[in-house]
Amino acid sequence: MYVKIKDFNIYYEKIGTGKKEILILPGWGDTRITFNYLIYLLKNEYTIYILDYPGFGMSKFPDRDLTVYDYADLIKEFMKKKKIKNPIVISHSFGSRIALILNGKLNISFEKLIIIDGAGIKRKKSFYLLSKQTLYKALKKLNKCLPKKLRKKYLDKLVKVFGSTDFKALNENMRRTFSNIVNTDLSYLLDNISSSTLLIWGEKDIDTPLKDGIKMNKKIKGSGLVIIKNASHYSYLDNKLYTGTIIREFLKEKT
View 1 (cartoon, rainbow, N blue to C red):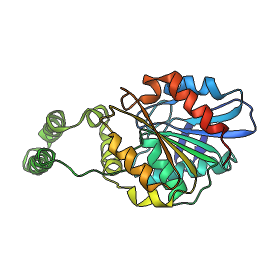
View 2 (view 1 turned 180 degrees about the horizontal axis):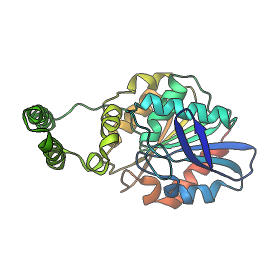
View 3 (view 1 turned 135 degrees about the vertical axis):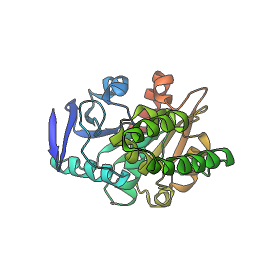
């Protein structure tokens, strides 16, 4: 199904008929498909909403740059249109950035919040990475000295040499948006989280390291942290059964 929100045409799915509602916020580049197991596990007890972000799955990207606050505003409007109030929110990676803004900045109430391998904490860059970025910016400036017909080819080569895997996978229109998002530090919102919060983290997550989860656990009042042994950034896929059991037990607890 599609819903029109401002200049977005967003694809979403609604599964189940339970009285309580779950809103799933996937990670960057992920779609509803990666959550099929959790949806199957919970659909008989809850009504579940999950959507494709602009630029992924079946939702087109607009002709402009976006920030993480734009994505949060989009979800806020989606919740209004669908009359979703006080939902249980399950977020992964980038989706956790949105959840932090919704609850910690916009004061949108969640019955419970589950953060899986969450993003939002901007880490200090290594000397190697800083040097690499400085060189990239210097070489990028040289592009203006080239003939117009050679500029795009030159920039494409720079991206191939210096870009991260995620960055390379994006089309040109989404790259500035990606940069906007990863350079936004949301750690200032952690003290503001008011929802009962469960953190689930992969022990061997290298995208959002376990130390980020430990920091969130310290900053978010009353939160709990469960570490999935030998799991990666996709801990909920690496150990589906264990993650599903943890989530179901957490949802049974009274707040």
